[in-house]
Image 1 (tube, rainbow, N blue to C red):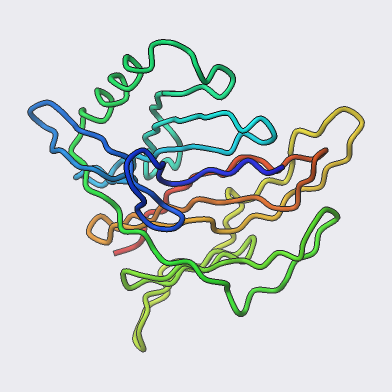
Image 2 (image 1 turned 180 degrees about the horizontal axis):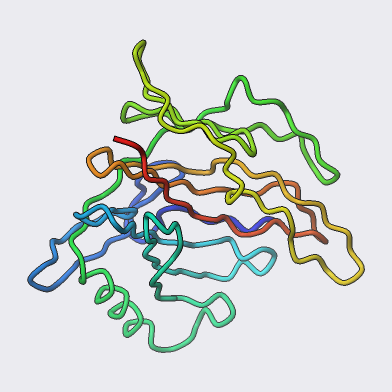
Length: 231
């Protein structure tokens, strides 16, 4: 079955339906305490996320805290707090402290989570495995985000709203996956699973999910991408 991630992780209380709170206390002279991820650094250069996937059929607990470089759109630091291959491994308190120390290098503020709904203009997609699948769009904080693979568009809402992004976002798609030996697994369908933004730093965080898997051709874990919006 699919392995699913979330922008936030349930460690304290529900944030919203898809994105939930994680309690993190930062220490140090340059840090300020906050309670929820995802978050953006005060200079707008980095985004911090918590990543937890369903771990497929095993369903083992797992947790990773990662920092993404906004302009490079890649994870530059991370701490695996709970390894799904060894969910009961000793030393969790030490790893949690390492994660807090990693976050304490910067000052953060929480991103605002956008609301998801079915994209009424997105076509239904029927793949070799499963379906039909309908893409979702994300709306809020003055933005509407549509991702009809491979086309990504971001518009300001309102009658005079500008189109901020329109491009083929190839980096969000997975054209290949690791199949089992002797299997011919098709590329999965990519769509928005969660979205969050900070308009002051012009940062948009997307969590992309992949559908169309099976017990043989597992769906890949969700991926996280950050987009710098134009001023």
